[in-house]
Image (tube, protein in one colour):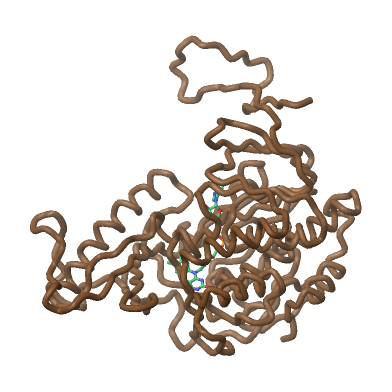
Length: 443
Ligand SMILES: Cc1cc2nc3c(=O)[nH]c(=O)nc-3n(C[C@H](O)[C@H](O)[C@H](O)COP(=O)(O)OP(=O)(O)OC[C@H]3O[C@@H](n4cnc5c(N)ncnc54)[C@H](O)[C@@H]3O)c2cc1C
């Protein structure tokens, strides 16, 4: 069969073209199966890219689906140009990416991880490096292609529906990895997910990244016209604002935009709109009040999302695990970053925990955190892992997401090459391969 039916079928129901007054529509159509592969990876952020690199290196035929024109997710389209955590010993997939950035002289020199340190890189060059590394490994890329829907039958997904410029089409794969950040594949296939804090669903806040260029003082003045946006009068009225160097005579600026839901279309739309208004107010403050000789350069086309949906996995990593520096036999990644849980309900530099409780020792992430409960051929990697919100606040940094991605790619390829599903995977074998590929799991 080379096409599949999509539509949430309700037995006995007929679709017809008559207008209906129901609050739901029932939609069915045949969709061509245009792509067949061993491992389909949905979402091309740092987790998706490292998963693809790792699965391809194992010899699997890999297809990577990304809705934007470049891969990298938060690290490129989101404008988040700095790796937090330890940048050595994350595994060969991440090493290849760092080496690529180094060839372009587009990343700060290595420093061993210390408390809040990070390694700044050029987001635009990263987009180039990622695509070249993926193609070098033989990964097939579908850009401008959005994952739309999937159905699981007794825990197994056979096809998923994506849509790009060619229209809706199906991907048939032996194994799927959800790296969408929002656990879209996992939730749409009917596996369980959660979001935000248990008591009210509030998620870690989003932030917008924008960039300014430095000019001679004589050329500097406010670029924001009167009457369009509010005025920020003093530094105390700024939202949490982080400023870091962005190459020569340029700064990256990050502003906190709390109280929106990344998994809700209207809320995310409102967040995008508010973030650009706030950006103009902040820009105006720095130009007009602080007299910074800055001109607006550009803004990330997408607001940065720290937290969306998380899978409910075979194991849920907890803040207590991190505090205890817990080790697991089936470890596939190691986190070192602090509990970077910004308070979801205000826009200042505030944390969910008191500042003296943020540090954690190195800790393990077990393979089971990537396995959605009940799934047979689906894994998830990156910021949609199975973790509580505070554990996520540390594990979400890109270095750790890259480790999870590499492990998911290795495991998926292992299952495919053994012609089996998750039941055939020995997590200890995954761990051995993760370590053989240079990931340091020592606590
Ligand atoms: C403002 C901000 C600042 C941060 N600062 C740092 C920092 O300094 N250092 C650090 O290490 N980490 C930082 N983080 C965390 C880090 O950037 C992210 O947690 C990490 O990049 C997540 O990687 P990911 O691959 O899991 O998800 P993402 O980067 O979100 O990637 C998900 C990808 O999936 C794609 N996708 C989603 N849905 C679909 C779909 N339906 N179809 C097709 N594609 C889809 C997206 O377009 C995206 O490319 C920051 C995060 C934010 C938001």
